[in-house]
Image (spheres, rainbow over the protein chains, first blue to last red):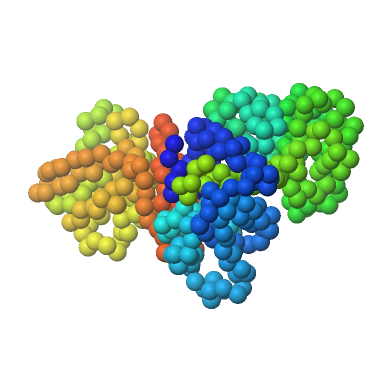
Length: 308
Length: 160
Ligand SMILES: [Zn+2]
């Protein structure tokens, strides 16, 4: 499979075979990502990190992946101090940075920015979030977590929280549709997933159920994926409190759960998971966050032509 | 009312043209959007006649006749988006010398504006908008190549 020089922009660009290959590569590299094995597969290569809005963890996760595999990173620094504040276009910035590095990681507040950047760049561009648009490395690390901690094929998963605006949930559902899945969407009426996404999933033969009750689904699922519920989405603060409380994952809720149930969350969490869950075998969210490193290491090595 | 008398009434309403273009079988109600696409009035001196809700073979249709003007291929592509069944008839000396159906292109470059105000194609970047066209049983959907948002309704409102 040929990944060299490929841009990583949107999950829609990937077939199931391609995803499997990325996840296989990540699994191979996991000991390197943990620092248990030394590797120099990315030695001599330079990665540029262009973050036009802060996302410290995503940035550090890419840095860790690059450095642990023997490569180096160039950080743009703050936007205020750079030419962008003087009004330079992203297209010009990319054409300049392109000469400094072997790949570019871009996070930018405008949707479609990574796709455009890829048109101006001769080196591969990896989208680390474009506004409310795509964040494919998050989805890939979510898939890796599900595969690693449970199983991908025909997973029974519940996705809870803000499903109306949450791009994490939309992109994950789309990717899971490539593997077949029973998806239960848990959210209050006002934050339901957009109808066109549900229709699209159903047209891929995915079973989609909707509910506002965690209790209703908990005994039947392999994975529970909680997403952030943002206060700002609710005009009425008491309504927010009510919804947040009803979707909160607490120890009593898990009494009915399967033994192997895994709980995921993209982090940072606000109030969605009771800290008492952290020490149980159900908690996968901190490992999930770590899995970003091997997954990003796999992508970097694949697109820069250094497949392990 | 039989078809023949229907036709003759129709002829009375609109004079044939000597040289120019007749756009026939326009989806009923879309004639004014066709004029908008062709930037008429303003781009041609000749007589332009419009029929709205004319009786067609199966359903009502709009017709636009433009004296002394032929269409550019980009204009034809735009018309296809709002009137997928339209035909373009080139007229010389009162005769139809060429007749073709519009064809919906697979990609649209530079003539539709993305509905997403936060899309990079709506910023000051040096790029032209680009859409993938999906034609699901005659229902046209445009997907922005950049932000992936879709346009399904009132496409005419988003033409540049
Ligand atoms: Zn767009």
